[in-house]
Length: 424
Ligand code: RM4
Ligand code: MN
Ligand code: MN
Image 1 (tube, rainbow, N blue to C red):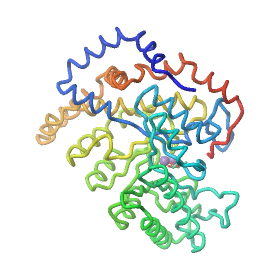
Image 2 (tube, rainbow, N blue to C red; image 1 turned 60 degrees about the vertical axis):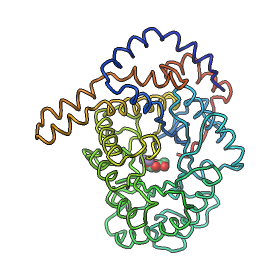
Image 3 (spheres, rainbow, N blue to C red; image 1 turned 120 degrees about the vertical axis):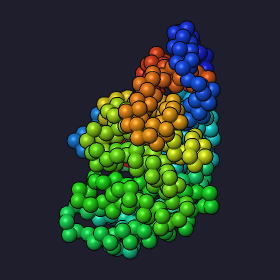
Image 4 (cartoon, protein in one colour; image 1 turned 90 degrees about the horizontal axis):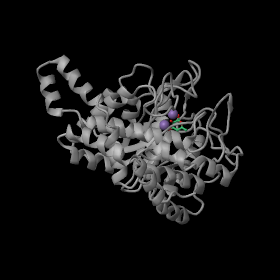
């Protein structure tokens, strides 16, 4: 299905008077409103292809119906999201879940929806039916050189797919680790991973990057070979300028100060990008901002301050992406909510009075520093985000529009209620 511009205009008209009043009220209090609006309009967040279907847990999966049955349909769904919010202009593929058999046709289709291709993701955490050797005991860190070779070749193949699609980065997440003490020699596992990554690094085209994701546990429950940002950073530093660390918000132990991690990675030029989601307990992959929106704001506050300090382009110098999983919600609606939450946190961070904060910090005025942050955080910036969407041709209220346009009903009609394997 396609959403037409006139449908968006009709929906926006219903809200226009109220919206205008609300926007003008908030905008009046923001001295640099034009700059904020420009930045909000330029800000896009990539959609992961694997989040467009209903996911499950190891206890079961409950299909929501109308799920995409092919890569083409995943692109169609990402296109719907982008048509509604004009803030999701790229899609990230996971190979081999989404093999682009005919890359030129896939690229054209994506372009018709206003989409391009974000990072490509490799998968050496599952065995594929036609695979010679098993990843049961890991991939790039494996004790057997032949398994490492197979995993290296897979990553190089993923780069080749990405080149055809116009991607510019390979995103690597390894489930490699150990389940029990004594199972693994940590040093050897790390060294094997490094050497394997070196070969992948050598295969990167000149303008490509490799993003190294970390995660403390799951599926392994004793150790993970790239378990935290330090281990990822160490690998990225040893590899060279094309390698950097990817931060998935759900990949931290409880209480971790993610904003501080982000700040230092950014300072070192080693922050590749994000997998946004929210978490209550572990890698829960919940809708962004549904549990801890204040943390999200604090992360964006560090990002804005750190990017400005390095003269970076907010929209393009960092990889912004969602990595979520939907067990009970409609994936399209959930992704719309996530994009909104990210844009809200970004807008709030843009409102922080940087100079006042700096002087409060220099004066050790702790109370005032907190006041300044919370002044921005408690500002209702939703009218600014809505206005940015409106100015870019999107809807003022994406989730409501999705329902009024009966997106899910229409997708079910076209695709049926059947269960579709998403890969996860
Ligand atoms: C992992 C990690 C990766 C994602 C897989 C599906 O936990 O977040 O980014 O590709 O899940
Ligand atoms: Mn992730
Ligand atoms: Mn994850």
